[in-house]
Image 1 (cartoon, rainbow, N blue to C red):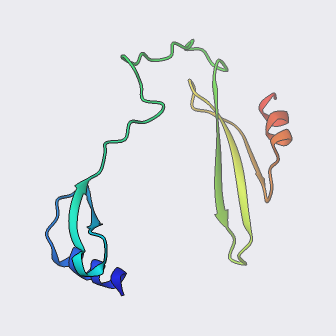
Image 2 (image 1 turned 30 degrees about the vertical axis):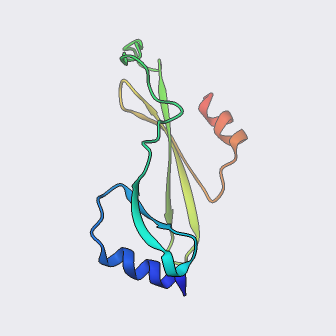
Length: 112
């Protein structure tokens, strides 16, 4: 088949990184392979300018971080632990284990 022929030809040719093989020609008898460089894609949310750190008060309970940790028991049952950590003191304010933690429960426990 044509696909197999192109795959065989492209694997045997040395092509530069960042390029893809393309078939040129109207039919299988006149087909040749050319390596066309891919266009550099620009990220939709590319940063513009310089970044500055977010200024936060260096006091306890000014900012918290939420983190989910998940694991699996020997029986195969999965569970999650929601950790709430104070960013300044690095103290774990809460560790909530459960098999399913809803968004309402996260909101309720983060307000403590």
